[in-house]
Amino acid sequence: MLRGFYGAASGMITQQRRTEMLTDNISNINTPGYKADQGSSRTFPEMLIHAQNNDNVPGGGSTPIGELATGVYMQDRTQNFSQGDLQETGNQTDIALWQDDLPENEEGEQGALFFTVTNADGEERYTRNGNFTVDGEGFLTTSNGSYVLGEDGDPLEVGNANFTVTENGLVTDEDGEDVGQIDIAYAENANNLVKEGNGLLRLEGEDDDPEELPSAIGNDAIAYQLNQGSIERSNVDPNQTMTQLMSSYRTFESNQRMLQAYDQSMQRAVSEIGRLG
Image 1: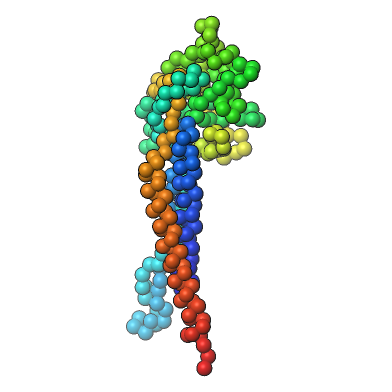
Image 2: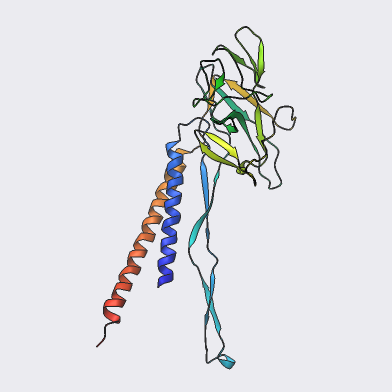
């Protein structure tokens, strides 16, 4: 009976976490460059049940009865780095990153490309949100003030919003002078990146100072282009996400009703079956 409690409770916890993940996706459906989270659920190791002291077995040994599931859990929460649709805005400071077919890693998965920026502490971070702006000092920044870095690792100083970006990332100011090239970072295994907030991603390593992502510039195997005056939309599918959200909610309710049934059975066992006299 208690195993039933654990199984139903683990199912409710799993669906609660899945609902939170899907709700985050829905709330960021209009966030430029947002990559949807996806989760996978697995069962805990199953238990093999035996009947002990079986008289039909020589020596009163045990007889296998079967396997018993012990509940489920959300194994991991990863991001879907597939390309999002491009939306034309007409804003010169908006830059969309379009990635073509990329090389596959050892696991048969494609990598991903990102703009290289800095966080508030000057540490290198990555983003797909190309909704940029120009600050008061003439530097190209994200909407949250993070500097957009050039190929040389320095912030790009464009002067004002009247700059031009070519498809390969070369930036010229309003006078036609080259000011640098937007650095595009390449992640062979994008699952090593974790969300940090404000659309920024950081590279998660085994130590406190992980290596930075290599630049995609000069790598002939990596094809991409930048589109000025456009942004990359979120890759969240609203219809599919809402369907998954309703399914998760119904599964949560089913486990809740099961838990209530177990509770009523335990109450009856205590108040009626266990009554003395």
